[in-house]
Amino acid sequence: MTSVGMPQIDEWLSRARHAVAAKDMAGATEHYRKVLEQGDNAEALLHLSSFEARANDNYRKGRDYALRALSSAVGNPALVPSVLLCLRHFEESAALRGYIDASPFLRSMADPKTLHLVSAQLSWLGDQALAIEFVSRAMQLQPQMPSLRLARATMELFLGRFDDAEADIMECLRMDPGFANAYWVLAWMRKWSADKHHVDGIRRALLKPSLSLVDKTRLYYALHKELDDLGDVAGAFAALETANRIHRAAHKYDKEGTHRLFAQLKQMPVQANAPGYTSDVTPIFVVGMYRSGTTLLEQLVGGDPGVFNAGELHDMAARVRYATDHYFPSATDPIAVARAPGIDFRELGRNYMEGVAWRLDGHTHITDKWPPNHMNVGFICQAMPHAKVIHMSRDPRETCFSNLRELFAHAAPYSYDQVELADYSNQYRDLMDHWHQVLPGRILDVTYADLTRNTEATMRKVADFCGFPFTDKMLQPNSQGKSVATASAVQVREKVIAREVPKWAPYEQYLQPLLNELR
Image 1 (tube, rainbow, N blue to C red):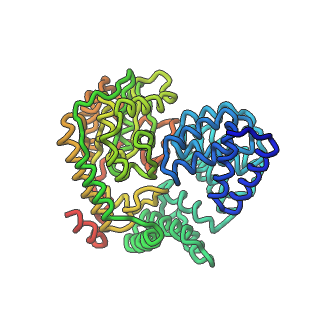
Image 2 (tube, one colour; image 1 turned 60 degrees about the vertical axis):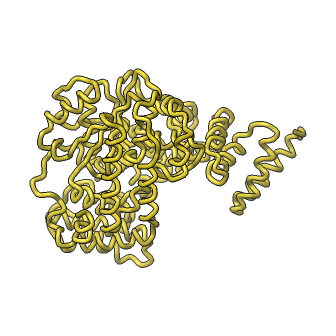
Image 3 (cartoon, one colour; image 1 turned 120 degrees about the vertical axis):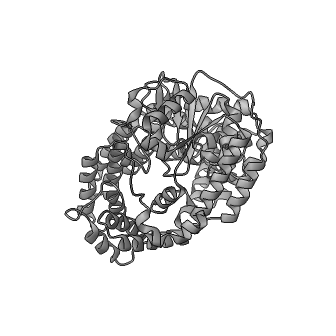
């Protein structure tokens, strides 16, 4: 390596930035590599981190670059967005929280966009209270930006502060009467009535010229929810059908690819008694399909004082990416599964437990209730022999209909078409049967019907499986004052309710494609 002076390094950095601005990623990468040859530089490391992980499929190298960048990036306001997004990309939650805590200058920043970004990462980490502080600071600097107020309303909703959230959303709509995202969040916040609803406002918003497909989709989902609350089944389903059609047309879903992936998972070699990694803390993985009751079960389990409810973590997928040195955007993918025989499962388990350790604060158990981990059960059980896997299942008709009417952020692309959704449900149930066969005794099945109708007996079984004593605090959701950042954030604040008439029943005539595929 030939040593060069600072002027030359500055010139390479300048050229790299111009290349990024021109969207010339190859040129930017070339110049950043020249900079890195002269020694660590946070800006170069952050750029090359993303390039190595995504373009070169060198996930480990990309992650290592990201962590190396931290020491020199701390205290540099210009690098804050890159650091936050890079650490989030690698699911490095401990490093992300450490970076924010080590950067006191963030609180006094005068850039609303950066403050909003910091707030979003804190919300993702589960610290809604601190996230609200940051977004409120951004609102002080830019009070007429409704998206900031909506962000705060969403965090208030996650904390169960529904009145505060509703007040913020109504102020959003005062600023922008056609704000589609505000109507969407508002619709799911409460059950609306004939005396109080927003159907007319939503319909007026839908008449707005040049409405984007994203906004149109959100408005139709909001219209579906509010018409459903009012008992207009035909109108509600028409709105839902329109929303699903628009959203499905804009998002790819590979049904055949899902079949191949699930078939490959069932062929993956699994050692039922793998030594793996054990620790004094027991991870409890709650898996299933979205909207199957995983959040309710997690909140009931959280009645034990030794249990920390971590919510939907993506840590296992991130550790599998590192173990297979391969980036994939979802729970797993064919390349990762094909590389499974070469995984050091003990190391995988150790990396997972070390990654969640910062959250524990003396707790003996931690819940991880990301539903798509149903694809990672084989990885989980081989990596951590002491891990508990609870499979939350629900009547497929109820689960699928609940998925059909949910607008997911970046998940469940199968859920916007009735036949594709039912097919995925069939594939998932078949995979769970397979895990039971190859990992006997490692998975506890809990049905939503039992959880809501025979709560005490079911929770006694869960407590025994997890290794802690049953208490009466496990009979009602333990969410007061806690962050619940899932689609069930509203419902889980209520008491355990066993619905006599399933939600899908009034829509049966419209759901024949779904019901026939499930049969």
